[in-house]
Length: 199
Image 1 (tube, rainbow, N blue to C red):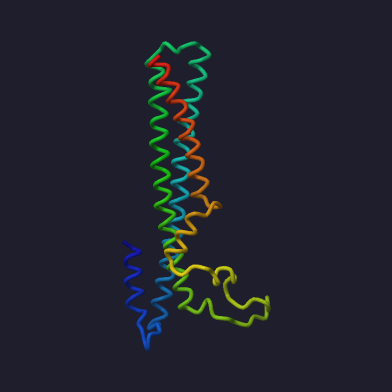
Image 2 (image 1 turned 135 degrees about the vertical axis):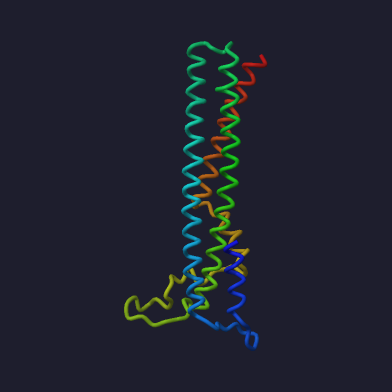
């Protein structure tokens, strides 16, 4: 809802004059810029908290399931169907479900964060962050921001979001890989449990 409001507000204050966008009110634009930064920070904090929450739950459940499996095999309790159903079927199913929910949630939060980044990029350009400036300190620098953030190969915000989303050096990517491993391990435990009950 906040993103919709920000985009709508940008349309209002960015009017066209001779097919060139001009800013009517830089103070309002700075206010929106500050708001988007806060939203981006909130979103990335929320993503981090979500990653910790889902990882803690799935790690604890997987530890319980594997520990239970070791006890079952060591104590030769493979005939105890209630124990097997709980440790090798019920817990792995919960792990798989929670991991899938966590992966989908991290995807949603990360896409929201990337959307904030594209809005910030557009506002920075309108505020003159991308204009060339001569500096006494770092005289070889041409811009207020690192040049790699200014010159990119993206034609649209959608292109940037798609590319950044595929980045293999992000928190979301590592979280996804970790939970895919959890899903594989849980599926293996589930197969052992079903095999013990059915055979």
